[in-house]
Length: 130
Image (tube, rainbow, N blue to C red):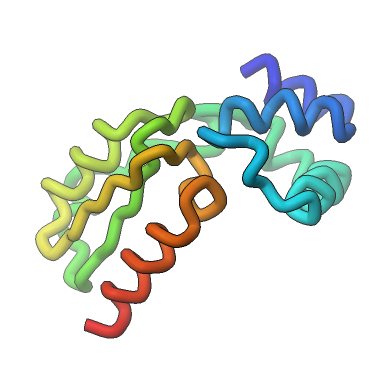
């Protein structure tokens, strides 16, 4: 939470680096361009408003009744080491959505597509070409 508040109120590469330790399992894997992009988004008024709401406020729980009505095949990908939202949230949603497939990526945090991009891309590709 400290990292999100710091990054939102004073967007900088140092604040973003600090926050990376919470959204990524392996911050060193992060492309420097993603860091620059994140800072630019947060400096924008719209980006600042989204991040200001922070953990839990900008993301609200989807009612189980709504999840159970999803008819399309759904892929839920979760980083095993996600420090913002643990695996139990994705797992719970996958049990409610009728046609859900749930995949956990090892050695990945909240941004599993950055932490373990090869596994993420493989899971996504296999789901899409099926």
